[in-house]
Image (tube, rainbow, N blue to C red):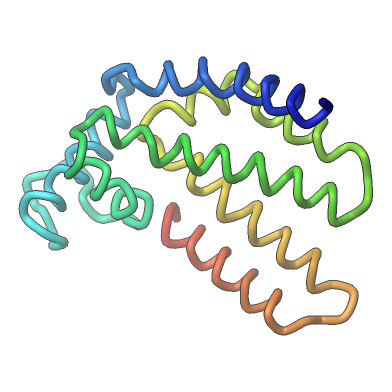
Amino acid sequence: MRRWMFALAALAVILPIVALALYPPTGFDETMYHLPLVRAIAERGLAFHADLRFPAFPLLAELLAVPAYTIGGDVATHAIPLIATLLTTALLLEWGRFRGIRTGPLAAAAFLGTPIVVGLATSLYIEAVLTLFVTAGFYCLDRAAPDHARRWLVGAGLAFGAASATNY
């Protein structure tokens, strides 16, 4: 019974956020930088696009959005930050479980309940993807801390490298 209640509560939180993600792109950075770059990469390939405004910055978040754009257009690109935010929430829950503390759900709820997080999760801004990679990096460092497990250190390096490839 408790699992059903948790699943229903999670669904009640996630569905309105998904509905917000279905709105067309309207944000300044989204329509001025990120979406035109995703469109250019999807249509003309990965190259320097001199016709775009500020076309030289880390591209990982935009590259992740290209398949969604190809499948469903500009609104579908909102799925990438939404998925990244939901993965960050799940990672916070797992981190609390790993540490054996009961505040994991509270941390996840505080994260997902913050209005700016919801706003960034429903638009093609790179902060949601960046947050996922930074959280994953610190989670890996925390897992590696007791015994310096090499696989967790490699995971931290990969996550922090991906964060660097997302934003400078």
